[in-house]
Image 1 (cartoon, rainbow over the protein chains, first blue to last red):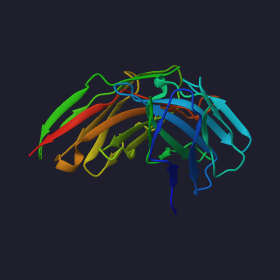
Image 2 (image 1 turned 30 degrees about the vertical axis):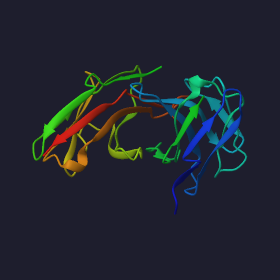
Image 3 (image 1 turned 45 degrees about the vertical axis):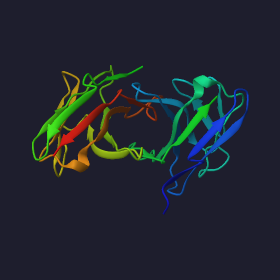
Length: 114
Length: 117
């Protein structure tokens, strides 16, 4: 049981480049989420999914796309990277029923956009 | 949207002593969950303790306990017998228990805890 995995751990991009951050979980969790963590601001929700084929926006969705084709995977796409997207990105997952539970976090991806 | 406030950016405690981290939140909901997460330098987010709003009894996990004051919308974390391994960033988080928002977590800005030997 690997829990929540994220790849890559580190990434450097140039402005305008695109890339996909990968997230996978093996706990059969319905909910998956992406957060970004910036200094002094805690974690902010980017996008989330309540199940395969269903996604919704969080607090800071601009510049990011997501899709959920399987229960296990929830990739985050940056279509045209900007320096403002330099951050640490966390993926998380949790059960939904019978009562929502805590989220389990991946190890994070540190992204730098030059 | 719900907001979570941690007013102490940084705190220090002597090893073996007790420290309390503060958290307040703003919500109009009656049912929700509150969490404390620990983030050591490794960046891994580790669940420390959770509290369900409909339970009046304060949650306890070994050396960690909370003081949940629902009317005051306060959720503080007490760490007893502090250890060097407790040094980390601590985040308070809120999650709705139902409805459209119940997958969304709202995090405070964090409190950095230093433990002095």
